[in-house]
Length: 326
Image (tube, rainbow, N blue to C red; front, side):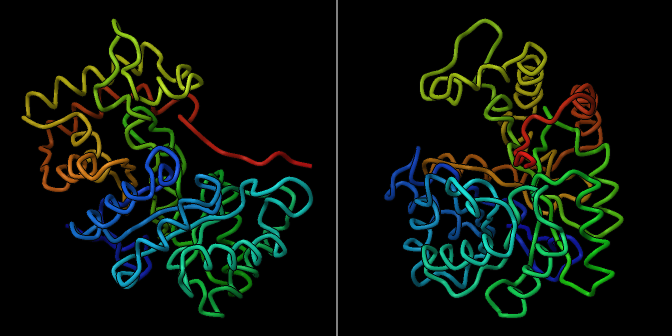
C-alpha cells in the first residue's frame, strides 16, 4: 500500500480508502466485517463513514468490526445532513454537532475520530459557530483533524479565512464527487486545495459503476447494479457517460487491466488528491479495486484519459448534497 499526507497535515492515509455507505444496507454485518478486515489486512487505513449511512448501521458495524484493531484505522465520519426531522436535526450548529459526535463515538466504540467532516455547508448557521465548535472538539481530544464535504469553493475558502483570522483549527480535506465522468473539481477545487494545502477526497470515483464497464449502449442495467436497484440512477446513464465507460474499457483491455482499476489509478494521480474512496459489498470486490495501487500509468495513457474525459470538466457535478436555506 502507498500512503500520502492528507493535504498539508501530518496525517498519513492510504492512497485507496474504504467507503462504507453500503454497510448495513447492501452488505450485511458479516459481509461488511469481512470487507473491513480485508481492507486493514491489505494496508488500507482510511475508513470513511457518516452518521446517516444505513440509518446509523454503518457506524455501529464498523465499531464492532474494529474491536482490537482500532489503532490500525484512520477513522473518518461526518455529520450535517438530515439525521432527524425538526429543529436541530441537521446542519452544523453547535447544538447538532456536539450531540452527533457523541452518538457517533458511542456507535463506533471509540473515544476519538481521526477526521470529523461536515457533510455539507449549512446556510443557516454562521461559519464561526461551526468552526469554533470543531476547534473545541479538537481541543477536547475527541477529534484529531477536521474536513469539509460538499462545500462550494467560495464556502471552503471563507471557512479557511475565518479559521486563519481567529486562530482556529483548519479544514485539512474536502470530499467531492470526482472521476473521469466528473472533472468539475478541476475548475476551482483543485487550484484552491493546492494553494491552501487541503487534500481532496473523491467520492463516486467510478461514477456509480459507469466506469467499471458494466453498462453499455445496447444493453439494460445488469442485475444487482445500482441502476437495477435504484431506478433514479438511470438519469446518470447518458449516452456521453456510457461512451466514456466503453472507451475506458477498451483502453483498460489494451493494458491488461480492468476499467475500474484504470479509472482509480488515473484519479490517484490527479493533483491535490490524497485518498480515493471506494465502496465494496464483498471482500473480492475490494481486492479488484486494490489492483489500481500497483498500476503504473504512462504519460501517453494519462494524456489519452485526459482527452476522452475532457468534456466532463464542464457541466454540472455528478453528485452534490446540500441543505436547503431556511
